[in-house]
Image (cartoon, rainbow, N blue to C red; front, side, top):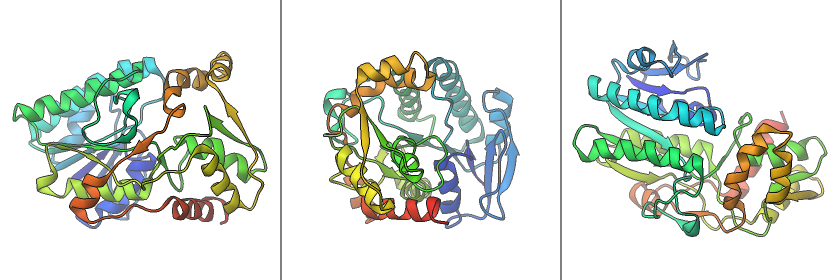
Length: 310
C-alpha cells in the first residue's frame, strides 16, 4: 500500500495519477478524499489528530506527505511540527518509508540564484523557520538510522487544475482569462523558476519507488533558464491571445494591502523571493534518471488548453 497524506491538493492529485505505474494499491487520505484512479482506497481523516495519522499510515509501505495547511504563520507553527512528529512516529511504528514534498523556504535568501541540494540553510522568514524545523527533524531521524526517508523539494509550482495554491495561476492566468490585468509580486525584472505539477507528481512517485534514492534530498525536475516576471506575463498573454497588461505590487503596497486582505499580510515576509533572481536547479535528478522537465512554453500551453479552453 502506498499512501498519500493530503491527497486533494495539486501535488497529491498528480502524484496519485503517477503512482499507478508502480502499484494498484493507493490510499488517499484527507478530510474529504476523492478518487483520482478507479482503484484508489479512500480514508477520511483529520491529520491534526494523532490517532488519525497512525490509522492512515498503518499497513503502508510508503507514505507521501503532500499536505498543504492554510497559508497563515500561526497555523503553520501550530500544525506542522506536531503533524510531522506524528507522521515520523507512525512510520517508525509501522516500518514504512517516508517521502516528504517540501519547498525552498529554508534556503538562504542570498543563494536563490542557482539553488541546488547544497544551498545553505538560513531561512529569512518565520514560515521558513517552520520548514527548516520539520525537514531537519526528518533528516535527524534518518541520520540516526531510525527512518528511511526522502525530501523531495520543489520550486514554486504551476500546472493544470490548480485551485488557489499557485501564485502564477492567481496573479496571471486567472486575470488574463477574464480580461483583466495580470499582477506580479515585486519586480518583473527578475528570473523566477516554477515547477510543473505533472512533472513533480511523476518525479515524486519515481523517487518513492527507487530504493537507492532514499535518505537523500532531491530537487524535483524544473526547467532551466526561467523567464523573468515580464517574460512570464508576455508568454501567458500570448497563449491567451491578449495584450500583456500588468501591474507590479512592490513590498510597501503588499504591506498596505495586508491591512485589508489577510493573505497579502502573509506574503510580506516572502517578498524577498521576488526582488532577486530565483533559479531552481534540478541537475541531480535529471542526470540520475535521465528525465527532462516540461518546458515553460509547453507548460503554459497545456494549462491554457486544459483550464480555459474546454
